[in-house]
Length: 242
Image 1 (cartoon, rainbow, N blue to C red):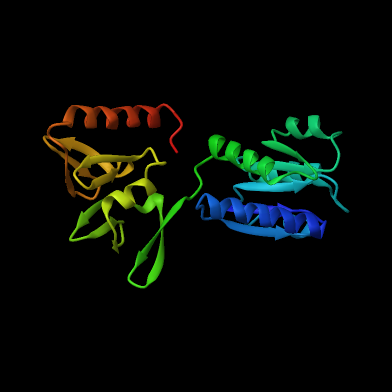
Image 2: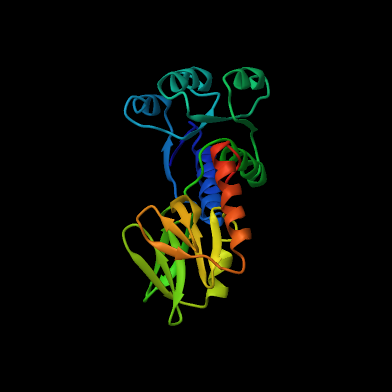
Protein backbone atom coordinates (compact mmCIF):
# COMPACT_ATOMS: atom_id res chain seq x y z
CA UNK A 1 0.00 0.00 0.00
CA UNK A 2 1.30 3.45 -0.96
CA UNK A 3 0.29 6.65 0.83
CA UNK A 4 1.26 10.11 -0.40
CA UNK A 5 1.50 13.26 1.73
CA UNK A 6 1.25 16.52 -0.23
CA UNK A 7 1.76 19.75 1.70
CA UNK A 8 3.97 22.75 0.96
CA UNK A 9 4.33 23.67 4.64
CA UNK A 10 7.42 21.82 5.97
CA UNK A 11 6.20 21.84 9.58
CA UNK A 12 2.76 20.45 8.65
CA UNK A 13 4.30 17.80 6.37
CA UNK A 14 6.67 16.69 9.12
CA UNK A 15 3.89 16.49 11.71
CA UNK A 16 1.63 14.51 9.35
CA UNK A 17 4.45 12.05 8.65
CA UNK A 18 5.13 11.62 12.37
CA UNK A 19 1.44 11.00 13.10
CA UNK A 20 1.13 8.52 10.25
CA UNK A 21 4.32 6.71 11.21
CA UNK A 22 3.05 6.47 14.80
CA UNK A 23 -0.28 5.05 13.62
CA UNK A 24 1.40 2.42 11.43
CA UNK A 25 3.74 1.42 14.25
CA UNK A 26 0.99 1.16 16.86
CA UNK A 27 -1.32 -0.80 14.55
CA UNK A 28 1.50 -2.87 13.00
CA UNK A 29 0.77 -1.79 9.44
CA UNK A 30 3.20 -2.03 6.54
CA UNK A 31 2.94 0.92 4.13
CA UNK A 32 5.17 2.95 1.84
CA UNK A 33 4.90 6.67 2.64
CA UNK A 34 5.93 9.25 0.02
CA UNK A 35 6.23 12.94 0.90
CA UNK A 36 5.83 15.86 -1.51
CA UNK A 37 6.53 19.47 -0.54
CA UNK A 38 5.70 20.70 -4.08
CA UNK A 39 2.48 19.78 -5.84
CA UNK A 40 4.13 19.62 -9.25
CA UNK A 41 6.47 16.89 -8.04
CA UNK A 42 3.42 14.91 -6.97
CA UNK A 43 1.55 15.56 -10.23
CA UNK A 44 4.53 14.26 -12.21
CA UNK A 45 4.08 10.85 -10.57
CA UNK A 46 0.37 10.40 -11.32
CA UNK A 47 0.93 8.64 -14.65
CA UNK A 48 3.32 6.08 -13.19
CA UNK A 49 2.42 5.62 -9.50
CA UNK A 50 -0.67 3.99 -8.03
CA UNK A 51 -1.63 5.56 -4.70
CA UNK A 52 -4.10 4.02 -2.27
CA UNK A 53 -4.50 7.10 -0.07
CA UNK A 54 -3.41 10.72 -0.51
CA UNK A 55 -3.36 13.49 2.09
CA UNK A 56 -3.80 16.79 0.26
CA UNK A 57 -3.35 20.29 1.59
CA UNK A 58 -5.96 22.52 -0.06
CA UNK A 59 -3.98 25.78 0.00
CA UNK A 60 -0.75 25.40 -1.98
CA UNK A 61 1.36 27.80 -3.98
CA UNK A 62 0.53 26.68 -7.52
CA UNK A 63 -2.29 24.29 -8.44
CA UNK A 64 -4.00 23.91 -5.08
CA UNK A 65 -5.45 20.79 -3.55
CA UNK A 66 -8.82 20.88 -5.34
CA UNK A 67 -7.21 20.98 -8.79
CA UNK A 68 -4.80 18.20 -7.87
CA UNK A 69 -7.64 16.10 -6.48
CA UNK A 70 -9.51 16.27 -9.81
CA UNK A 71 -6.37 15.15 -11.67
CA UNK A 72 -5.82 12.37 -9.14
CA UNK A 73 -9.38 11.08 -9.44
CA UNK A 74 -9.09 11.12 -13.23
CA UNK A 75 -5.88 9.06 -13.25
CA UNK A 76 -6.74 6.87 -10.26
CA UNK A 77 -10.50 6.84 -9.49
CA UNK A 78 -10.19 4.34 -6.63
CA UNK A 79 -7.66 6.39 -4.67
CA UNK A 80 -9.02 7.81 -1.41
CA UNK A 81 -8.35 11.46 -0.51
CA UNK A 82 -8.13 13.12 2.89
CA UNK A 83 -7.92 16.91 2.67
CA UNK A 84 -6.16 19.05 5.25
CA UNK A 85 -6.51 22.80 5.49
CA UNK A 86 -6.56 25.75 7.86
CA UNK A 87 -9.99 26.90 6.61
CA UNK A 88 -13.49 25.37 6.68
CA UNK A 89 -14.65 27.18 3.54
CA UNK A 90 -13.78 24.36 1.11
CA UNK A 91 -15.37 21.52 3.09
CA UNK A 92 -18.43 21.23 0.81
CA UNK A 93 -16.29 21.21 -2.35
CA UNK A 94 -14.06 18.58 -0.78
CA UNK A 95 -16.91 16.18 -0.14
CA UNK A 96 -18.31 16.80 -3.61
CA UNK A 97 -15.04 15.32 -4.82
CA UNK A 98 -15.89 12.28 -2.65
CA UNK A 99 -13.14 13.02 -0.17
CA UNK A 100 -12.97 10.49 2.64
CA UNK A 101 -12.31 13.11 5.31
CA UNK A 102 -11.45 16.76 5.92
CA UNK A 103 -8.90 17.58 8.62
CA UNK A 104 -8.88 21.13 9.91
CA UNK A 105 -5.43 22.32 10.95
CA UNK A 106 -4.15 22.09 13.58
CA UNK A 107 -5.59 18.59 14.00
CA UNK A 108 -4.74 16.10 16.73
CA UNK A 109 -3.35 12.59 16.46
CA UNK A 110 -6.74 11.26 17.60
CA UNK A 111 -8.44 13.03 14.67
CA UNK A 112 -5.96 11.54 12.21
CA UNK A 113 -6.42 8.13 13.82
CA UNK A 114 -10.17 8.41 13.31
CA UNK A 115 -9.72 9.32 9.64
CA UNK A 116 -7.40 6.36 9.06
CA UNK A 117 -9.85 4.02 10.79
CA UNK A 118 -12.53 5.22 8.37
CA UNK A 119 -10.16 4.56 5.48
CA UNK A 120 -9.58 1.00 6.61
CA UNK A 121 -13.31 0.42 6.94
CA UNK A 122 -14.14 1.75 3.47
CA UNK A 123 -11.14 0.74 1.40
CA UNK A 124 -9.06 -2.38 1.05
CA UNK A 125 -7.40 -3.71 4.16
CA UNK A 126 -4.15 -2.33 5.48
CA UNK A 127 -1.21 -4.71 5.30
CA UNK A 128 -1.02 -5.62 8.98
CA UNK A 129 1.85 -7.70 10.31
CA UNK A 130 2.99 -9.54 13.41
CA UNK A 131 6.54 -9.62 14.73
CA UNK A 132 8.22 -12.78 16.05
CA UNK A 133 11.69 -13.58 17.28
CA UNK A 134 13.26 -16.10 14.91
CA UNK A 135 16.61 -17.17 16.32
CA UNK A 136 18.35 -13.94 17.23
CA UNK A 137 16.38 -11.76 14.83
CA UNK A 138 12.95 -10.15 14.91
CA UNK A 139 10.96 -11.12 11.83
CA UNK A 140 7.89 -9.31 10.49
CA UNK A 141 5.22 -11.48 8.88
CA UNK A 142 2.33 -10.02 6.90
CA UNK A 143 -1.04 -11.26 8.16
CA UNK A 144 -2.12 -12.00 4.59
CA UNK A 145 0.90 -14.31 4.13
CA UNK A 146 0.00 -16.59 7.04
CA UNK A 147 -1.69 -19.80 5.83
CA UNK A 148 -1.86 -21.46 9.24
CA UNK A 149 -0.03 -21.66 12.54
CA UNK A 150 0.70 -24.77 14.57
CA UNK A 151 2.90 -25.79 17.49
CA UNK A 152 5.70 -28.35 17.74
CA UNK A 153 8.31 -29.06 20.39
CA UNK A 154 7.94 -25.68 22.18
CA UNK A 155 8.03 -23.74 18.91
CA UNK A 156 5.33 -21.77 17.14
CA UNK A 157 5.41 -22.59 13.44
CA UNK A 158 4.00 -19.95 11.09
CA UNK A 159 3.39 -21.43 7.67
CA UNK A 160 3.51 -19.04 4.71
CA UNK A 161 3.48 -19.84 0.96
CA UNK A 162 7.26 -19.45 0.82
CA UNK A 163 8.59 -20.73 4.14
CA UNK A 164 7.94 -21.69 7.76
CA UNK A 165 8.95 -19.22 10.50
CA UNK A 166 9.68 -20.86 13.85
CA UNK A 167 9.70 -19.00 17.16
CA UNK A 168 10.30 -20.38 20.65
CA UNK A 169 7.15 -19.47 22.61
CA UNK A 170 3.96 -21.03 23.91
CA UNK A 171 0.82 -21.17 21.80
CA UNK A 172 -1.14 -19.37 24.52
CA UNK A 173 1.31 -16.45 24.34
CA UNK A 174 1.15 -16.37 20.55
CA UNK A 175 -2.57 -16.76 19.84
CA UNK A 176 -3.59 -13.23 21.05
CA UNK A 177 -1.50 -11.80 18.19
CA UNK A 178 -4.04 -13.17 15.71
CA UNK A 179 -7.19 -12.62 17.76
CA UNK A 180 -7.95 -9.19 16.16
CA UNK A 181 -8.17 -10.80 12.71
CA UNK A 182 -11.41 -12.53 11.94
CA UNK A 183 -9.98 -14.70 9.15
CA UNK A 184 -8.19 -16.94 11.66
CA UNK A 185 -10.09 -19.95 12.95
CA UNK A 186 -8.99 -22.21 15.78
CA UNK A 187 -9.61 -25.53 14.02
CA UNK A 188 -7.61 -27.97 16.15
CA UNK A 189 -5.48 -28.13 19.28
CA UNK A 190 -2.70 -25.53 18.93
CA UNK A 191 -3.62 -24.90 15.30
CA UNK A 192 -5.16 -21.78 13.72
CA UNK A 193 -5.96 -21.57 10.02
CA UNK A 194 -6.35 -18.51 7.81
CA UNK A 195 -9.73 -19.16 6.18
CA UNK A 196 -8.66 -17.22 3.09
CA UNK A 197 -6.40 -20.19 2.28
CA UNK A 198 -9.08 -22.86 2.70
CA UNK A 199 -10.30 -24.44 -0.53
CA UNK A 200 -12.93 -26.71 1.00
CA UNK A 201 -13.48 -29.24 3.77
CA UNK A 202 -14.00 -32.97 3.66
CA UNK A 203 -14.69 -35.32 6.53
CA UNK A 204 -12.68 -34.10 9.51
CA UNK A 205 -10.18 -32.01 7.54
CA UNK A 206 -9.88 -28.62 5.91
CA UNK A 207 -8.26 -28.81 2.50
CA UNK A 208 -6.05 -25.80 1.80
CA UNK A 209 -5.57 -24.30 -1.65
CA UNK A 210 -2.08 -25.81 -1.82
CA UNK A 211 -3.46 -29.29 -1.08
CA UNK A 212 -2.42 -29.53 2.57
CA UNK A 213 -4.85 -31.03 5.08
CA UNK A 214 -5.56 -29.53 8.49
CA UNK A 215 -7.55 -31.49 11.08
CA UNK A 216 -10.81 -30.24 12.57
CA UNK A 217 -11.81 -30.81 16.20
CA UNK A 218 -14.25 -33.72 15.99
CA UNK A 219 -16.06 -32.62 19.15
CA UNK A 220 -16.49 -29.06 17.79
CA UNK A 221 -16.80 -29.83 14.09
CA UNK A 222 -20.30 -28.38 13.71
CA UNK A 223 -19.34 -25.05 15.31
CA UNK A 224 -16.08 -24.80 13.35
CA UNK A 225 -17.70 -25.49 9.98
CA UNK A 226 -20.46 -22.99 10.82
CA UNK A 227 -17.86 -20.31 11.65
CA UNK A 228 -16.16 -20.99 8.31
CA UNK A 229 -19.50 -20.79 6.45
CA UNK A 230 -20.33 -17.48 8.16
CA UNK A 231 -16.95 -16.05 7.16
CA UNK A 232 -17.40 -17.07 3.52
CA UNK A 233 -20.92 -15.59 3.47
CA UNK A 234 -19.62 -12.23 4.77
CA UNK A 235 -16.74 -12.27 2.29
CA UNK A 236 -18.96 -13.00 -0.72
CA UNK A 237 -21.56 -10.42 0.32
CA UNK A 238 -19.10 -7.65 1.09
CA UNK A 239 -19.22 -7.86 4.86
CA UNK A 240 -16.55 -6.21 6.96
CA UNK A 241 -13.61 -8.55 7.44
CA UNK A 242 -10.63 -7.10 9.32
